[in-house]
Length: 177
Image 1 (cartoon, rainbow, N blue to C red):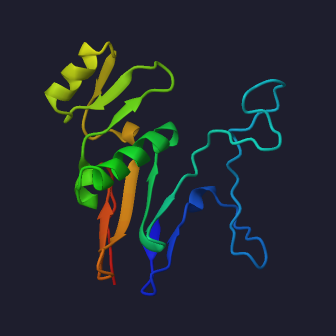
Image 2 (image 1 turned 120 degrees about the vertical axis):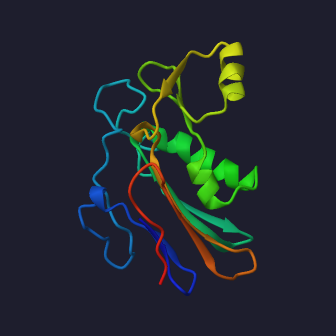
């Protein structure tokens, strides 16, 4: 869930993962998702100082010129970092509105079979281009839960109203009041 209040402050909540513990005096909520760490000696994600293992708590808060403009997230396990960048790039690099960016076809380099998974509404020329470059493709049916689920609240650049966008691949809604 993502939220922005009238003062412009925003928050992202991932309550499924939170034990409900907040560090006194800080407002920092702890989570219980340290599954990326392992105790195996020599493993890249072995517990230790300055380690940053892969894990899936990666909500985003976007600023421009020091001012908040958006809060968003994309849940979905190993798809999260890939999906975050796809949605963000569609908005920033291609000028799509947040809802169009969320609804656009996603791809995924699958962590197990290493093929590039594509949603079935991916343009045919995109798929052909990937195959021509030697990528092995796996096509999925719509709607697929393999590509994450995103929500965004975006503030218009003039400091005006907000735009909410919610994932069309699952149930949910962008609601303002």
